[in-house]
Image (cartoon, rainbow, N blue to C red):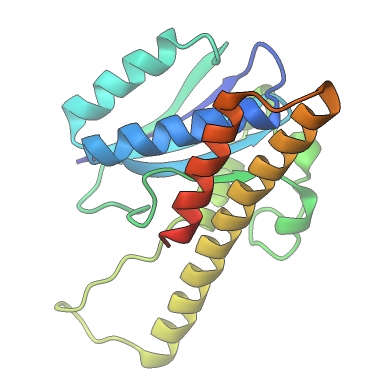
Length: 204
């Protein structure tokens, strides 16, 4: 199993509807292929970590490089892992904002305006801190002793991360409907996207 992270720039800013469509596509396809990971977006920039069997990940990377929604792409890290580090998510998602990182080690001086292709490519430690912030805790119930207090804290952190993911998905759906309503009327495809997002939220 491998994990690959990359940063890419979007040729055009992504609307809420376009982000919602991308996220639903990723989650549907990744569940079928046993891929997990995390996707962050802001300022026309994607930061993503994906993990799974090596041939499956390499095939996905080929598709990503050919996807017109991604402009310039820079691979950041490729490493072998023993188990998924984002196991709870077929594709976790969040939009980057200043509010999230004030108390995070390694990100106290990082602002949402820094979330751009050039900055991320040149700051490996910031990328590591961003991905660590969203990474699921790894559990080993066989080897070593488990500190009960630490386990409770990790469970709470996991719950908060999942809640943040649900909020991001709901926000995308609401923003999409709002944008479409201002233009006249939501399309059938958007309604289907929002229904899919709602089903996803209900199933958790």
